[in-house]
Length: 185
Image (cartoon, rainbow, N blue to C red; front, side):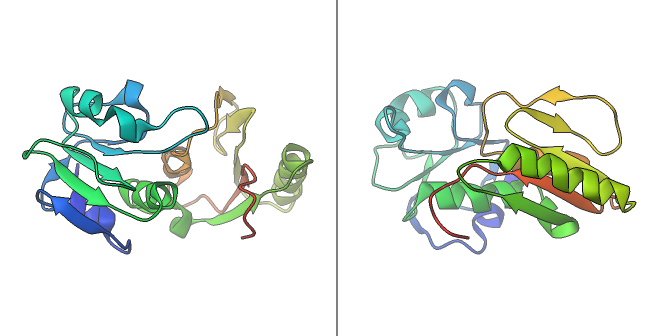
């Protein structure tokens, strides 16, 4: 559990309604996964815009909503406006999971072709050099300390949850197969 203000630290935002000192129970960006007391981040996709479903999100129990444009919420729900909810989601996720990327070396690999191959090559090179390496990819997740392979399913913007699960202080490096956003890093 975190307060909305803790999660918003370092982000440009405007409070339209409500209190940022309220505690939230979860960080969600998928309308199917809304939980009671969560902070919901509206994201506009190619064919679905969760800004248009805020009524449903609030009915399911969202305590706070982050949006790119004004949306109608009841008085008891905190509404925060940001310029770009995808960017905000990245910062909110990092804060929610206690900034796992700051606790390890992370290698992000982007591009049009060859990301997965390159990720596995980097992982192999680092392991050969003696580093403990985990991998988060679009095909699978390989924790550094277990031989268990986990299906990553659809790519999720909550990569922080997977990173934080690999971060125990002894984790040295991670290879991350990042989807190409079309924006240079």
